[in-house]
Image 1 (cartoon, one colour):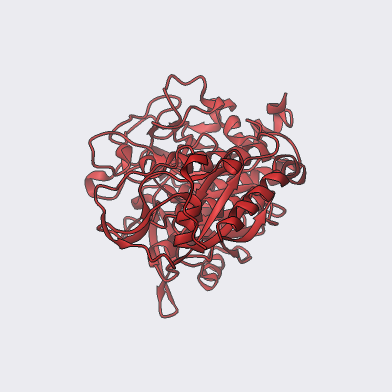
Image 2 (tube, one colour):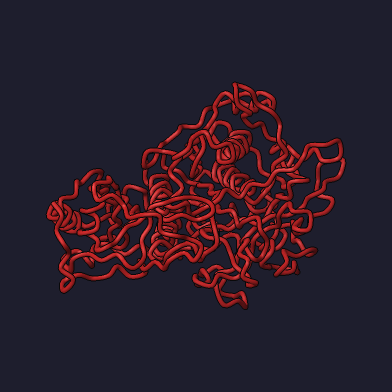
Length: 514
């Protein structure tokens, strides 16, 4: 079936418009018979609250899931256009639809083509997505029509030498005074957009660290990675897994591996929020300049992170490794998304040296751009407003990051990575992607010590006293300089885990609900 859409009774999904990438050329049109799967996101039955709701997950999903009538309406729309209805998840408010490119053209009013850039060839579109008036209010986004790469892992490596040995996760936890804990009873998720997880390598690393090895559960989302053999994403996965596995070995740990597309990214986060693992901390080491994401996608990400905050799930998102421009060569300053989402905890990078006893000797902004070894991202969002926790800051939009930690690759982490042919080797790894899992593990330790949910950790970060952080006041990211208090290079600074726990322990439980 290939029904040509009647334009008179169709409505454009706000923010779904896409302009042509000036670097891209059209290779050819998409075969009308090519099979495509999309995820349709639906509005919540009851609007999602702006802060921590203090509900059980089951209560939250019952109140804020999709309306049965909306699911039925989209089901009818899909079948009318010859699309197959696959997975339906009312709690996630998602429906998977599949069909041919011709059927997608008719259903969503889009013209698809194969585009080529210097980096890849991908299926894409120009223009907006439209749907019939009958389902326009129910549908908030449609992702999967495009399958171009949207994000990069925020991981930077350096050479291991006699003078650059880096740290282990346990040594950094000691420097940042993490409270004790093995993560038992806690649930931590990692979002991945490629590569694979190598349990054999992680087991060897945990043995070397002298901690128990409990494997990650691997959850393949939308079919998993497009290219599982890619070494870069695999290295990122192992950095995240070894960091979290070392610091909270007995936590329930899951890695969600999805294709590197806007659909894959969103579906991985949504799955991590709502699946049976009931994660209370999530680490995201992937992202890209805000301009890469359509307003429709930004709105969908922001809604997911709003859900996370309402459910008391702390989401840590790496702020990027290319300084204040985020690697965009237009002469302007840019921030990385999704760390610039109001609902995430953005993690920036520092350069750390320690004393003989393992305590902090000096900490500055990570900036090695002159040596082509990266610099922490950070800045002021051009598209997202300040979250309530930043209302007191004299900035025009969402400020990134919120906190920071050791990320300079020359003072980075000694991690074990697969080398192929069943071999593995040590690598000195940095980047803000090391900081997101570091603090996800801290959140798990804190919640284990509290014995109850943290609630809105972003709000707590800004409400906590100054001595809960190691304020970084030296250095810059080629756009923003460190200064006393919050700044757009290192946020409030690196975290003193024990003092942050003490603040959260003394604060009345569910204080943000008052």
